[in-house]
Amino acid sequence: MSRHTEPASFWHPRYWPTWTGIALLRLCVLLPYRPMMAVGRVLGRVGMLLAGRRRHFVDTNLRLCFPELDAAARQTLARRHFEAVGMAFMDFAIAWWWPDERIYPLVTTEGQEHIEKAMARGKGAIFLTAHFTSIEISGRLLAKLCPALPMYRPNANPLLERIMVENRERHVERTIPRSDVRLMVRTLKDGKGVWFAPDQNFGGKGCVFAPFFGIAASSNPSLSRFADMTGAAVVPFIVFRRPEGGYHMIVEPALDPFPSGNSTADITAYNKITERWVRQAPAQYNWLHRRFKKRPPGEPPLY
Image (tube, rainbow, N blue to C red; front, side, top):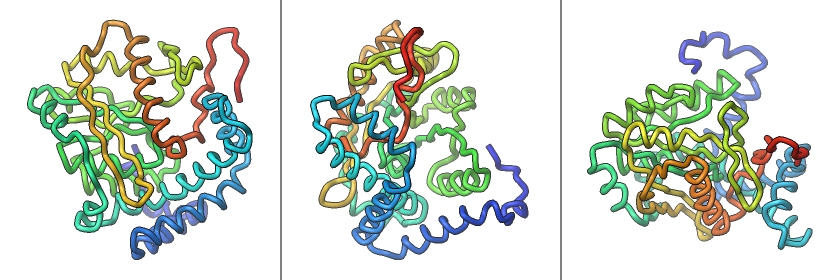
């Protein structure tokens, strides 16, 4: 993590586009919620036109995961997805800079008792979620209900990394880079929560392939290992953007039994949960990601 990057270097011209983007987000914060989301949808439509190969990733993912849809329906879903991606930028601004009194009137929560039950065990909890376009707001909403630290992948842009970490840590105790396994385990053993989303393509050693929408997807088996090492409860939760505006947070009962002793079976169970969430709000999942990038031996590439 780039906590020690020299601040003066951030004024180099290569960072000017980042500063411009942050300044625009800061301006958007002044708007009411609905106009902010309208701006986000427009950004998403523009982004769809400029997406290049990312548009190909989206189209391929939708074709693979929704074979029952015809081309016109997939095109409509792709457009709605890019609008959701644009709204995700507004969610960053809201999660970082809106005060509680502006955010929480927009939020409904279902299943908060499952958080309380998991935390009462005193062994910590892994709050299991997935990469939906509401992902940034989900960390702040969860941290309001319990001491939960988000685990994340550091950004390659050191300025953006610094801005993201500093603004997230205004609302949580600290953030956990995904490489810092010791900190994650220590957090759980201290009886706290960890926000964890292992639904992206994993190309490292020890990956397991488990079906996601009927297609073998490479996954990180560490979820089972973390739960086994710490005895932490594994609690699925998701935040959806509501059609009428605002957010709905759903917390489900802790997975039981978990881990099962079979990491492939555990990842398969998680993928089924994610599939169920995706079918509830298909446009809100992160279809820009090459979920099926790594293939089992002998299989051709899908992208």
